[in-house]
Length: 369
Image (cartoon, rainbow, N blue to C red; front, side, top):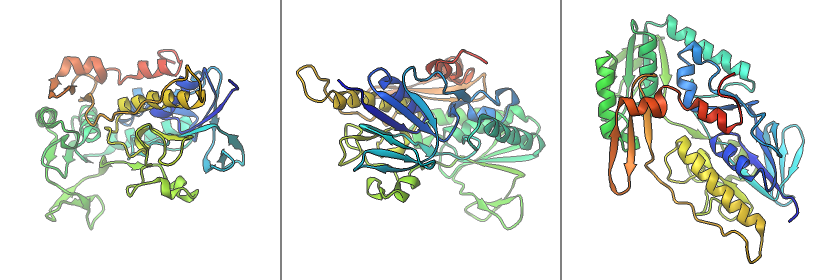
């Protein structure tokens, strides 16, 4: 079989999984605007603890053995010519293109800039502001909001820390109400003020905010952890708005192909799949898409691979650290109620390392710089 070209747009969790899995059978080009991989799982601690400043920033240099990583911004996908167009003017021919541009997260879970040094400087800025603030508020009671509140409390035991959440229970949007109760107990024990059923909006004075009832909340520093936005504006600008649903996510079929296209796939947070928007789901989609792309590239033949439908799993293992030495984990058990794991298991699974060694190994990097 002649060498085929696969272009993967986006070097997040799903994108690197697809690229790595296809590196042995195709000429893979991974395009990303960042010069390094951003391990978002470690970003909240990096925004608080100077010792973790560079932990989320992992070089792409050893990811692919045969393919390459191209630094650049994609401005279009020319389906007739089967080319991906970069802002530099470079055109990348493809037999298959994969959209893996992910979602935009609030800081500090966001890569700001294009270089590792630019991102590290942003983390240092967050660290400095946390040290200087007396009253710190986190808005949003999902996994990121809970984790960030705990990290801030451990870094600033003398500060007034508030977690405001619009829902009635922490972690409720992830189907983890029992884990949310454990989180609430930990935060209360560490004197983090938790405001439930509280919608927060900017107040009339600098450093003041209002809840849904108009009551004033004072804060010198606020972090928003209230959701994500799919990175698909570029697709709309490129004339592919019909590939998107009403929330801006890419519409895919059961085989992770963009609806109506055999040679365009999409994976990760950018898709409309009902998966949990977490790294394990992105990896699973990346593996499934790589298998189906292999089947597509094999063409016809007696021994060709068969494309397989992807089964979304709305509830996956959810581990929420409360700093490096504590946390809670919810582990699904098929049709039965999820198992709740406590401090020891969560520390081993995630809290202590934030999966940095695992992620570095996946990118072919040594355990530490």
